[in-house]
Length: 113
Length: 115
Image 1 (cartoon, each protein chain N blue to C red):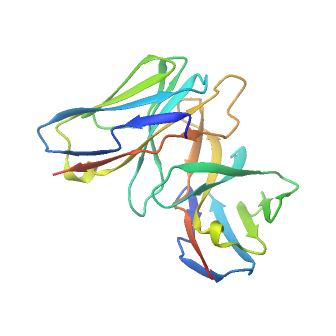
Image 2 (image 1 turned 45 degrees about the vertical axis):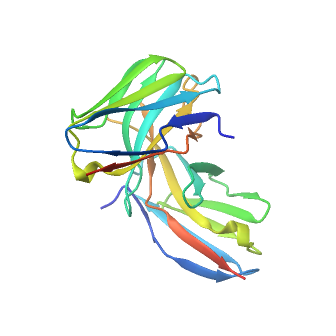
């Protein structure tokens, strides 16, 4: 089983629609959770952290379900500029005793005019 | 403009060549990372340096050799690579003290092609 699993997509969504992605993680001891965004031929950038109580940043809402070990990202009123790959990221303790980030393969989103 | 710069952006090399990738961060961070990104695979952590000491080596073949001369610079020396090593190599930095905040600052990557 993959450590962090995402539907690779692609998701092709009309402008203005609402879209949601899920991500599951295998390590129940994972500590923190994040969504990163990666534009085509660019580097990944932190989009938002995911808090236990759920959190919102403008049109973006992130939620965490520790019992089921999944994380979600909801994008409302999608814009053309939202087209990107969204990476689910989990912070856990590595075998070396350090904290490390584990990335999912990403979900590709294309917003259609 | 990114606070983490990588050179070269593109590199084509033969299997017998020796080359190096360079990364420089201007953010005052004290941890630096090398990641490998291949098509349809998640980012793979290769090496971590914290306070200029290597703290993680994720079973990376010895044909990849990292070097961290100071907290602002990170190198990845490449020697006798294989075609399957062709990928995007991403450097990242973070502030390691006080625990990991989850935010990595990535460079734009060096796209490597091994012939």
